Image (tube, rainbow, N blue to C red; front, side):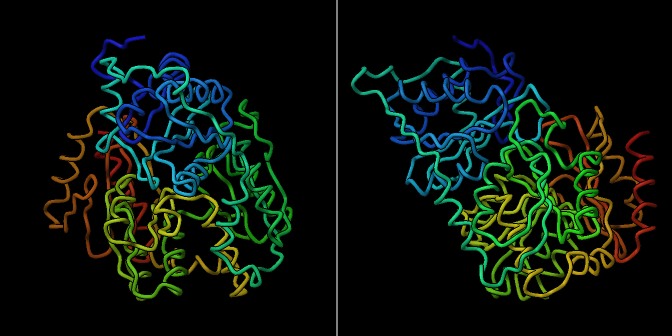
Length: 456
């Protein structure tokens, strides 16, 4: 099929994502495989897929496109996105593709693409060129039968799991009580294998991988999705709760009281933890909420480095700075030793080790920082005129002469509070974040003030 269009709707800023079959199907997946091969000229590519019902069919089309182009496939089967990130350099492959729509609703699917070394392929680093090849039907010729690629099945997770275990001292781990909520996503099977190597007492919630999403889309950012984890932590008197999104490249933590922990405070805590064994190193963070991270990193002897929001930007900056860790308040955590990629398994392992070593509860590890820099968390507004709203916000606060930063959207910094407001890269949303110096009431006062401008 030739797509006579200027753009293909499923090709986004960072990845490929759309409704199945209208925007993404096996045919488009086949052409994506052909275009990927023509653009990167790989010899070997890693393929993995999540639990969505359409994923095997899309994977089949994608792999056929690559095989017809003479590319060998390492098929690692059902997995999380980070398993493709790990397998690509582990097998010295020339690229990797994960079939997933992460936390999108049922009926969506997509792909995340990386080059050799798990360097992300996004809109400004090859994805647009792949899209253009599909639009123009500009592929290399299908190779002869004898030169077609071969599919190698390598579903074992053992190398990946052994790598995860290198981030903690197993002798330091205590038999903590954990509640884990896979949301019926891909985290369940992987966690089951990992848990065999660990001393924890585990209670599972929505653990079975099921693309029908019987308990709703696996997205802990949805507040009602957190309730069952909170209740189970309290019921089990657990030390910590863990929940993941569908492809588990993000993890969300709950303390021993069942309280959801804002991802912002985990960035500072993980940075401090890693700096203890990597003194003087650089830590990359996003610009949405910053004061706590900057202070915690600086006090731990590290160097905070600000980057534009988004996995491609964070990874690029981490490589440039050779940063040991990067964190976003949206629960993406990136590690130099994990090929500068994000992982939803490494963060909770590090926190479990920290609880074990210090004897402190998770609430004790977090509460002081949360009181010092209370925040709103990210608040989303559906709007149609983002540029006008941003201009109005800037004008409204101009008389107060704030420090202005435009690394990503608009950040305004005042003596006692700061804010960031930015447009979503993928949805018609404005995303607002506000923090203060120790004054929670001020945070919500400013949220109300900003909402009057946004919703005017």
